[in-house]
Length: 273
Image (cartoon, rainbow, N blue to C red; front, side, top):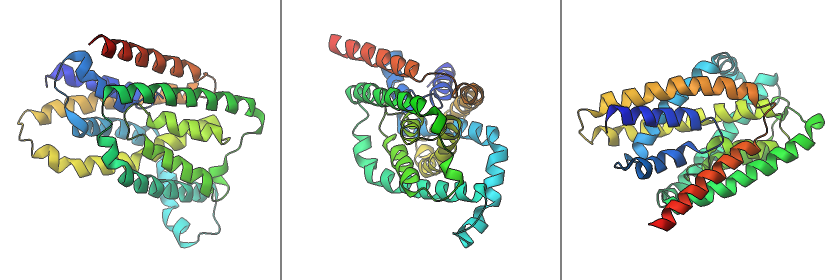
């Protein structure tokens, strides 16, 4: 892979990871669009390192606050402040994600095909639109449930939904936002919880795949990967900043329209072959 291809991968990753359009779907499609060899899931995961670092930097004060409550939250499960309840719900959602990711890992590897991505972009884009419409109708009755007690159903469904995002085209931020909005979370809280929830899974996946990456024996891979990671970090940081400011005002249907356009163009291209 050439350096400019790594820049493009990093740019697409940084933009699409935090927008509900599926970063994995876009990365999986790039080889078809650019007519290059698919670098594979491992390379995609390393690109996620840049966006994971962007989440850590942007939410550093929140992460520090929740980290301080980690031990007290686990020692005494019945009492605590808002940060303690957020931390407990976050931990439960993360464990649910890990469990279902392990269960779905094998079928997800077989789903890295163009037609599956077309379906996922279209179907889960529709869910996002429906969730956004329902959430806007409940705008005056929304709550911040993660900060006022254990939300087993909500946290569990968010964890499950994040696990589904290992299928290309689903979109991790898209599906978690959809579930959160359907269940009545405030939009900004839903975005924050969605972004933070990605951290443990992404970092765990990266560390798991690093040995396989090193076995490839490509002496140029380190520099190429670094270019992609830096690009995804910078672009991702900017994307988070603007999306968190816009999420309370922008209608998510526009992301649905974008997903449908990409899916239609891809389907048209596949039918022409």
